[in-house]
Length: 108
Length: 117
Image (cartoon, rainbow over all chains, first blue to last red; front, side, top):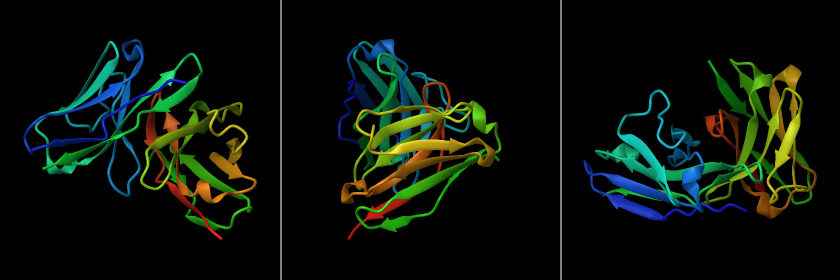
């Protein structure tokens, strides 16, 4: 089955840029989606189709995808961005949905 | 308002059965796939399965095939996740989510299931 690997944690100072990676075999050939989950809340879609943002999501959230790594970038990080972030793809070979292992973003 | 509203928290004993629900409103219920996602305490998101309410076409993750049953009632605009015999390891938060293209863009608030003797 397809596996998505994320770093367990990323720390960033306010106002700086956080990068969360998502590794998978030839992930660049798939569409990658990102979710933000704050404690005690349901996940929220923040980036879909590699780099598109749903309405209401700040432009500070952006994404890219190439080769074996997709990246979620959070610019000008704010305290309110502290959360767990998950990448996700649809694996067409199995018709299954796969979530990454998750990354906790801590704002210092 | 477009939303998914899930049933309330449940406390069950091992071996008991359970059916939790996810009611969609504000949109055409039969034209969007609804998925179920498990989150065990302190852990990540796991896709369990997905159903198309329009014709009840259902797919399961291999990890959950045979362990749970996903169904939907078009007339009630509600999707369900059920267990015939719960285990302590089923203790988790369960989310339903509406699928957009290949992603989940609308989530329910979650249902906490606790299984303990």
